[in-house]
Amino acid sequence: MSDATSINAPKYVEGHGLLNGKSVLITAAAGVGIGFAAAKRAIEEGCRAIMISDIHQRRLDEAAEKLRAIGGAEVHAQICNVTNEDEVNALVDAAENALGGIDVLINNAGMGGFSTVAEMPDDQWNLVLDVTLTGTMRMTRAALAKMTPRKAGVIINNASVLGWRAQKGQSHYAAAKAGVMAFTRCSAVEAAEHGIRINAVSPSIAMHEFLKKAAGPGELEALTSQEAFGRAAEVWEVANVMMFLASDYSGYMVGEIVSVSSQRA
Image (cartoon, rainbow, N blue to C red; front, side, top):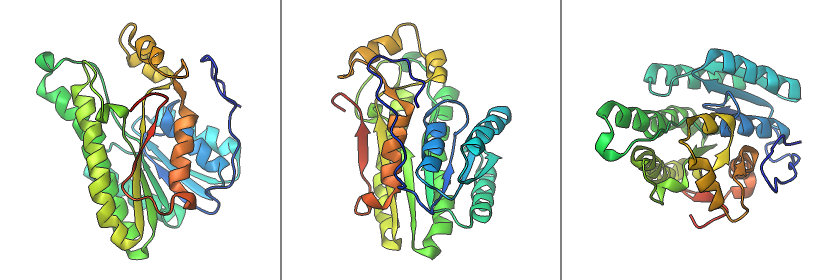
């Protein structure tokens, strides 16, 4: 069951076997965010094996142990910084071997922060784009090299409604997520020729502890107040849509950006 404390929190949705027999690789899956929620949901949806990655060894190890406790799937973990091409290639090679082939890749790694354009140094701008946009490209490129010969595979990218909508202090993050959307569409039409589907989710606000620590004073309260349900999404609600996109139920979807939002995207 969900441990959510937000108002009107929904009942946790049990698994329905959407990923029976599939293997899954997820970046930035340690901790309490969307990545870990997606890993947990993938196991609950019947995946046979999963590999998670992150840049924090302790949190990664803890996340892997929590996933193993669920049972029903092999769980593997490997450190990876998506800004490093060698680490990306090593992760995808390791996942391909450990999982017996990667059926599903979820590109969840991203980085944000708050800065106005007038005050933003180049290194802050570059890091956010390198992690969030270029990291997604690196992971996709490496995964396609494995999936293309098999003529099968699914890739899901994590974008954001900020790729469509303006918000002060978020120009770097919004630009990166808008780039993820455009990258999703363009890479998807290329990959479709090889039987591979690429789509993305675009959440508005999904509440977790790391987000609370990173947000400015009153920022989350203001954003949450705009949501139609009067609450932020639970991270597993975003993960649920990822599971749909990873499953055969979305078999005709290519290059789509699915808004996971209770307000206008």
